[in-house]
Length: 298
Image (cartoon, rainbow, N blue to C red; front, side):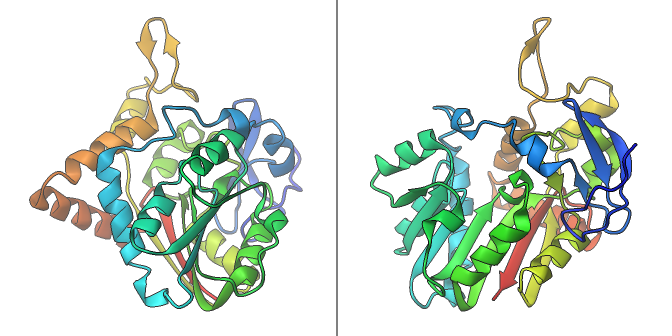
């Protein structure tokens, strides 16, 4: 087995082979514990024009309240009133920002998603961020929700994000955690390990190193969230590996759908919201959350 693969986080060149998923080799960095596959070769096999459809160009209503909270948390960075969402997808974060009177725009590679948002009169660039050629120091806030795990070379994107942020501006992002409780228990059977869609799942250490390489000096990483239904389902031996399909009349486990259902249930009342907050605090303190939340200041 070849061992000269380079970790996308810390750059270590001697990872450990830990399994195969969807015909791709998956490696674990022995330095920072980031999970990854071969970025360029895997990324070439994934079609983002076919990624979005009518179903996933909308989000559950309860998400809107959470998006408002996220946008409100950016208030102290508001100077030029400009916000950019990279990999904006269905545009939910942009919509929340516009409702809060931000001058918000997006970047997206998927043509169906771009067409969908342009029909709603949002300013969306179709293509990679570097091709948009935004001037330096343009934005107060740049966001990238569930994007970094898709990119064969995330360092280049982070460097470009830092370039277009104003001094003191904020980069906010989320991405799956390669060293959270689900990754630890399930390994490559975790549905977030899904090449060629997801190319790497960073650890806290790995993403911090990468952000520092990109030139960010003030970096805070939080871990949050888990899906106990997936863990229980997998440990019962009933987890299927990738797509939500019909097999022998039974629907495969759907990580996103069950996560939405769990979050909606825990957000439905103040007592349940308190329970959710306590659980997330525990997951952050132990660094066992399945998601990484990134706050990095230029």
